[in-house]
Length: 155
Image (cartoon, rainbow, N blue to C red; front, side, top):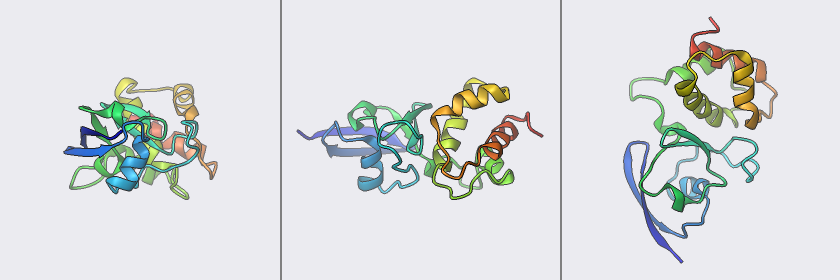
């Protein structure tokens, strides 16, 4: 049974009429053409689909779109200001933390959420927080350095 769901996406009001049990990731990619969040495992175990819902990192592949009604969803497409990149994006670029780039949007959004709650994380805290994010290329050392740079602790 379809339902009309209204939420804010990257600062813009959005309304979709769909089955509320559809995965948020599917609605973002197929209905709203926001393809930055990637389909990886479909089980919330790889982090490629990470978006922020009311500032909290969320696996969009296992989140029903009906759960985001009246909330704010931020995808990688909406992260950067109009005049440049978000500081976390800049840190990932400067450290060469993206190879194939498949995991990068999810890792960047996870980092944004993480640094809001833990401004100066230790390497162990970074490793623990990023456990649910898999990098197909195995670029973890550079990802950790990028997060440290973004936090101002790796320079």
